Length: 333
Image 1 (spheres, rainbow, N blue to C red):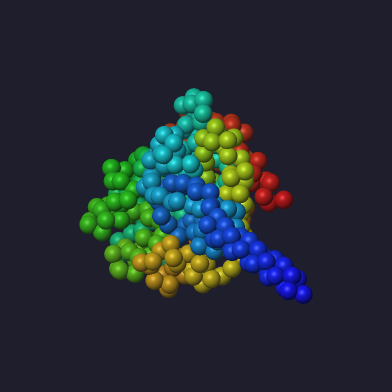
Image 2 (image 1 turned 120 degrees about the horizontal axis):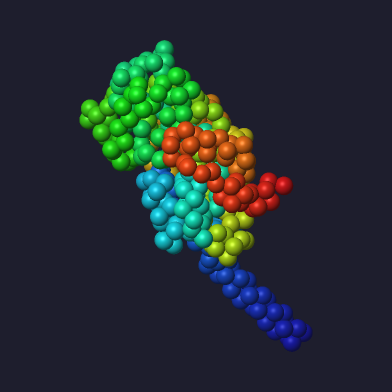
């Protein structure tokens, strides 16, 4: 009997030791670190922050290290120089790189937003705003060649405004400095992303008069891209990354502005909940976010048309060369 007790005790001890080691292993399990450079930090990218804050990336075994490039050109430079794994900016950046003839050019593999996320801000409240108001005025539009700049021009043309003659587009101010320049007295109007636009409005320093995204219609505005070589060498990670983004898109699509604001709040610790909720509702109202990560050909062609009208594109880049929907189409099945 004593032998059986000793044997049982030994077995229990062994089980306990194995359990302890197993527990330690699960606690120290390493996530795959993926570096992402975003074009700016904005609630406009809510599905991304939802995916980060609600653990959708963790579920896919990924840990995101996020940096702010403050401009699509700087994001692309970081990707091409291998300083980051994935870029997050307008698809136009990948079109430019393809047209430059780079052998290892970037490919867009997931779309996040489907409309322009900027708002036209003026110095006075104007509930009855129409685009004739900007004739003869100075507008701060962002970097020439960037999608915000080109989409603004596209909207102007839709409203019978000639960007080259009817207004002065002052693109001398860096993207990150436009709000400060405007509040200091430069320009009559400025295009701003959220939460900056609403914060300015709450402080009485400027007033939203129009949504550029609502005026422009659907256009592939912000997407994830990486070098072709990186995608081929990291297919499994890219697939898991896209899966996490898709979960974020679906969550945002099925939850209220209040719930989304709570989910993204950790990414915007200096913005109060009321303002966050207001901003999220603005973006929901214009259907700013894609409900899946597939970048379709028709909106892609519209983007190139916008670029052509702006005089920034001499030759159109083939859809199947710049866009790689392989992983996006897999995760939505």
